[in-house]
Structure formats: C-alpha cells, structure tokens
Length: 633
Image 1 (cartoon, helix red, strand yellow):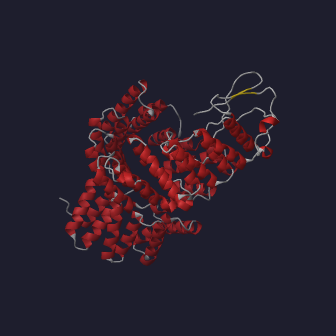
Image 2 (tube, helix red, strand yellow):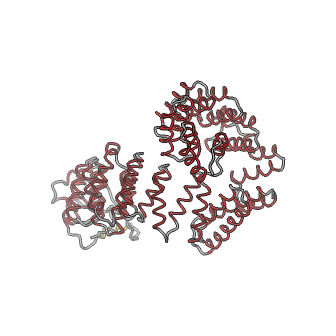
Image 3 (spheres, one colour):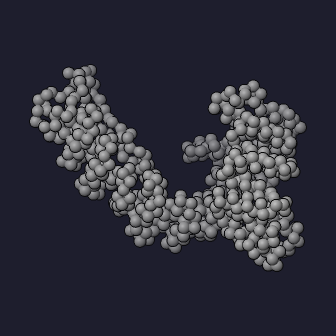
C-alpha cells in the first residue's frame, strides 16, 4: 500500500511534505530511470501528547519538537494505531538524530505492513546511521517479502554495492535480470558495464567475475547470449583489455552477428583501433539490411581514420536506403570538400540544409540547429575554396553567431584576399591587446588562451611559421604550465628545420613532465629519422612504450629504429605488431619498406597495394613507392 499523510497548516490548506533520498550515491544510475528508486516520504508535523507515548517503553529515548497546537494530522484510514505509532516514533527519533532508534521503529513497521516506502525509509535511516549490516538486513527482508519486486531487488543491489558485498551484488543482478521481461532483460544486460563501473575501488578488479556470474543463465539463452557477451566485452574494454574484449566479440558474433549489441561492441572496438573487429562490423552491417545506423557509424569511423574513399562508399550506400538522413549528407559533403570535389560538396551540403529545414519544420529532429549550422559552415568553406569571398561571407552571416569557428573563417577569408594583418587583428581582438592574462579571471584567461591558439593556427595557415613559433613562445610565457604548448613549439621547430631547438624543447618538457610519453617518442623518432644516435633514440622510444604500452605509433617508432640499425627481423616483427593494432598508412609504409629490403618483394607489394587502396592520398605511402621503385600494377 502507498500511505500518504497530509499536514494541514493553520490556514487549513493541505500540503504533502516529501523527503528526498538524496543521501544515496548515484551508483545505480546506469540501469536507467525505470529502476531508479525515488523515495517519497512524508514528514509528520503534528505534536504528540504525552499520553500517546505512555504505552511504549522507548518513549524516553525520543522527544517531539514543538509544533503548532492547531496543526492537524489527517491520516490514511488503512493505518492501524500501532503502525501509525511506529512510523511517527521512527520519524521523530530520526529528526532528533536518534537514527538507530528510528530505524528500529521503521523496520518493524515495514516488516509488519510490507509497505515498500517503509522499507526504503528504514534502509535510508540505516545508511544515515552508518550501519551497513542493518541496511542489508532490511533490504534482504524486503526482497524476502516481495521476491518479484524489481524495486526491492534494485534496493538490495544498491545496498550490496554501498556495503561492498560482491556475492550480494552478483546475486541481486542475477535476480533482477531473471525477473524482467525480455525487453527489460536486454536493457539490464546492456546497463551492466556502466553499473559495475561504479563499484567501490576495492571491488573494481572483481567486476568481470561479478558480471560473469550474473550473466551465467542468459549466456546460455540464444535470445540474450549476444547481449551478455557484449556486456562482458564492454567491461573488458573498460579494463583496457582489447584482446579479451575481442574474444567476447567473437562469442557474441557466433551466437548472432545481426544482434544490435554485437554491432555496438564491434564498432566500439574498431573505434579504439582494434582492426580485427572490422570484419565483424562488416558482417553485422550485411545482416542489418533494414537499419542504416550501423553503416553510418562505420562510415564515420572510417572518416576519422582518414579512410575517406571507403567512408564515402559506405555513405553512398547509406543514402540509398536512408535518403533523408541529414548527418550522412553532411559527412559526405565534408569528404567531397577534403577531396576538392567542390561541386559535389556544395550539392550535398545544400541537400542537408533543405532536409534539415523540412525536418525542423515538422518537429522530427532534435539537432536541427546543429546540423543547419554545420551545413552553412561547409557551404562557406566551399565558396572560399572556389574564391567566392562574398558568397562565403554571406554563408557565415547565415550561421547567426560570431563564435570562434565563424571568426576563424572570416580571418582566413581576409588572408586569402591579401589582408593577413587585418585577419590576425580580427582573431586577436581586444582580448589579447587590452587584457593581461596574468590578472584575468579564469574565464577571461581561457578566452585569451583560445584566441592565442587561434592566432597560431592562422599563422600556420598563412605559412608564417616563424611568426607562429614566436606566438607560441608568447603563449608559453603567459601559460607556462601547459605541456601541450611546449610540445607544439617543439613540433614547429622541427617544421622550421631546427632540430637542435626541437631537442632542447623536448628535453625541457621531459624534465618538467617525466611521464609525457609523446615527448620521448617525438625526440626518439626524430633522431631515428635523421639516422643519429640510434641507441639513444631506441632508449627514448622504449621509455615512451613503458608509459604507453601497446601504443601502435610508438611501437612503429621502435620498429623503425630497429630498421635503421639494420636489425631487419626484429624491425619486421615490431612493425607487424604495430600494424595489427592499427592499420595506419605510415606504419604500412615502414613495414612495406622493411619487407622490400628483406627481399620479400611480393609481400611488400601486396601490403603497400592494400594500404594505398585504403589511403589513396597518403603522401608517405606515395613517397615510399616512388623512392623504392615499387611496381604496384
């Protein structure tokens, strides 16, 4: 029963007073709003007369706060006198910080009535009183009274997590999943990784074991096995164990490659650089013929990997089956723009803008403003690339805001017209010319830093690298604790052909930030690339790998160091390992060159041919083929 008490203030107006359960940690939010417990409890404001306490031996342990004499309690008629007394005594005890006593009253009331709100309130009091065992006991009693209540089971799980009971957690999860209908089961399974991510640190290493035990039954059910194995895969990804996550993916695939959760895990692994997941992604897409979303997500990831030709092929298939999908039109327009096919870029961006306006007018789309803005920025970029300065400016006016993305494009437009100094002044604005950052508020300092970074970016755009270097130097003087700025200055020194200056800056960065792996790798690779101090370079790269194990780009640097030392077999093994983690075009170029020098020309040609098919515009691959005279036809 859901009892409700109303307190009538002197005016006679009835109002309900509810006490929120804010004391609970948000450890259960991963299961979604359907199982989040909202404690609604009424605080009673009526005064008790002394005779009302006479029948209970605990009366001296609590005292009522003074209340207005004319406060009137109106109670639900289903309450008997004893239950009313237990509730009221418990609440008054709690209000007087007698939470242990309050718990005893409320737990007795809950047990006798079976009321869910009373169980919740009793458990809350136990937690407030610091008694995890009492909270566990009350939650267990509630589950015993209502074994098929998701609310009761969810509370038991919350208490198990709060009191660090690993067996209790797995038991509660097992029961919760078994109670739910098919749709609820799948949602609960999907939520398990985010739920267990909130475990106390003492139990974090047991997350997979808890999940494995909780999912034992559903893993044996073909309807849910793919979801169960995918949940375990996501847990392994959270633990940064891609190999074991891939093993879970293969189990999910063997059960049902078309399952949406198999696809989710495959895409997540592929996004994190696990190339072995790509065949599963493709198999899932082939099985999901009626759903364009997995293919679009795959296209987006291909784009992020700079595999723009493959991404465009996938997007064209998406648009055949889902011609009103605005993000697909936008992404294809972006790729055409990068490929300098400005007519197609313009046509697709305009189509996105038209569809977006239609969907916004009919209320079908929640991101209409974002998509509309992206389309207009793309159209401004296309007009700029075609030398149509006025048209580009008009599209920027259409965006309707002067944020940094718009401001930067306006500055580039000025530069394209030979007005570089005006462009730089526009970017810098009064924030850099009038406000010293050292005396600025945090918000103002962030704005100043952002403008300084845009200035450096603009100078790079104008190929004024010396000026960009000096501007970065000024930024470092203003923000001396930013390691990224020092690293950026070192990379500019490299572009300017100042290897000694780059080395000085990177060594300064290493001294300041001894765990900054990119500094070790950049310095080591630069030495390798110039063929200088190869043993020292190898040591620097190995240090970077200890800080970031299995990083494919650092592993590539190490393989290239071995190659420059003439250690061809070790170089090939190391580069193969890097390429297995990430099929990067530069890693492919290095590995192809090693295989070529080893005399394994057929292997080298096949590898490079496949890489060029994936990255047809990559300059490093093209340069390697030309330098080696590698026949690809």
